[in-house]
Image (cartoon, rainbow, N blue to C red):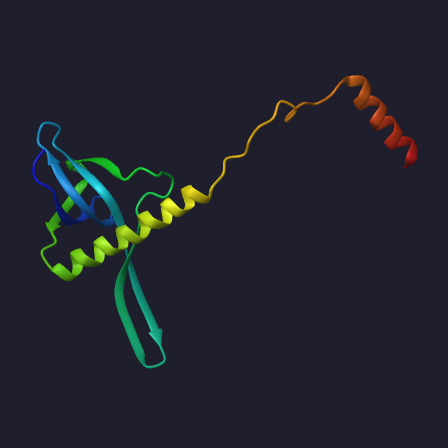
Length: 136
């Protein structure tokens, strides 16, 4: 693997992402570390129009932070050399990682007991339904 760098990548799907990138020449693919989706911001507030972008989680359904991307899915890629952009990316990644860590620390998986999902006996259920029917 070659030395990593922060890049902006335009995928053939139209998505734009920022990520720390390493190239794997053996597989002709990229390893993306902490990829963030670039979301365009366009707001009008009174007489002021604000344009820009925000960075959000690229893939929402996983806690993984490294992904392999085949190079044929990349339309174009450029290394980010502007210190302000690389600092913004790093800040967004750190904030996202701290939120994920906080979520993991507060999330308690539900403890399953032996009786959960226990349906009971047919006799008990029939008696319960008959009693309910007689009361109605």
